[in-house]
Length: 372
Image 1 (cartoon, rainbow, N blue to C red):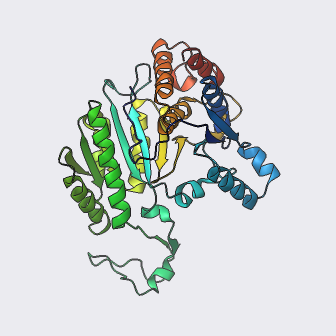
Image 2: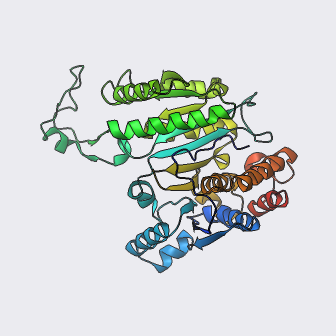
Image 3: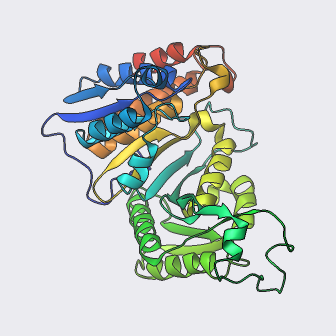
């Protein structure tokens, strides 16, 4: 049974007719993980049509940036969902998938499985989800020259009386935005996810975190809104931690968590930290949800340092594909993929080198396929 079921906003699609899935291989080493993942998906023989785009290197060589962005927009809009292989900029498209499709909830399951090479002495029982608000915060990219800020009429001193900068000093600024509507919807998403997980044996707990002891207005507003939203779900429990405290708890007491909701920046950073506790970014899948759309991608980057070596661990891509299958309504097939991953790690006979083995990307994926 998949315990991170995230099809909670009535956006899951039932497999009554053939679905269309866009496959965007991505850049550098990412296509090396996507190719065997696609082979695995085809092995399931689902009523699915795959729209497969070229990898980033080919796209960059044959199209302009505007042409690539247009191709991705048209492909995404023609499909029910997307399996995305991570971009370093060659492929592009991430801006449209996130802001263009308003995928406001970034869901990152953190689950240890026997065979994962965790650095923790006792990783058993780590099984929680980080939900990251995916649209605003510092990721709006509202940056500029400090002189522009000083000339804007905004306060030029901190609330403690310190000047923003020394006279005549050069610098840059960034604006952090936390809005009520976007925070409320990611809080409701998190609560509904916790309710779904509670039915599967999880505690039904929301953990909220931010730097609200320093950023009283912005992070304090985030905490206030999440707390009020959770009050509307009396079957759930609630706790909150300052973000630096949460960072150490993710390492020291990871089994305590169920659903953790965070602003954009903290969610991005701490989800990577959390992946490290189970064995690394190569094991970490993710999904991004709007009210009526979702796309799926591994958490790791494009790994340019190992591109061409066929050493990238495809686990994160395969598990992202399992999340995608669940979203589309192919629950039994998603479970088949989950079980095959579990068996492959339990047997430990075909692991990639990041997990202490010597198998190639394709050898690991073939071991999973053989266990479907």
